[in-house]
Length: 94
Image (tube, rainbow, N blue to C red; front, side, top):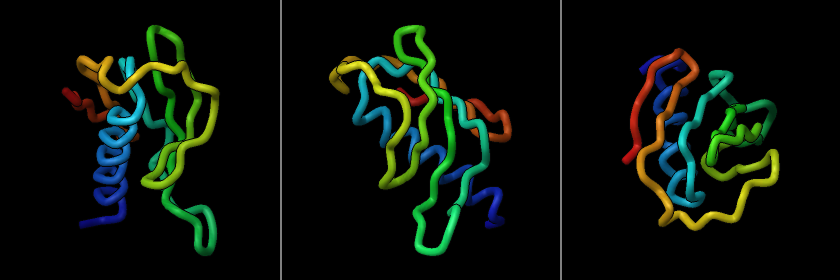
């Protein structure tokens, strides 16, 4: 698996984890491929997350979540989430 393919797989895994923790997520659009920014740093990627029609800028990773304050919506408030990976590939999380 190439670094590019690995990054895309991590993006999808991170999106699934994020949706399991945050309700109301309509779309996650990764704006960069992602990677480890420094020695000992965890993998992370910038993304735009749409919740109830509002866009939030977030940094997402397997053990990282930072960015704009998100609304307090329980994870059970979830239907389908469109995930747009950094290469433009679209996927649905149900």
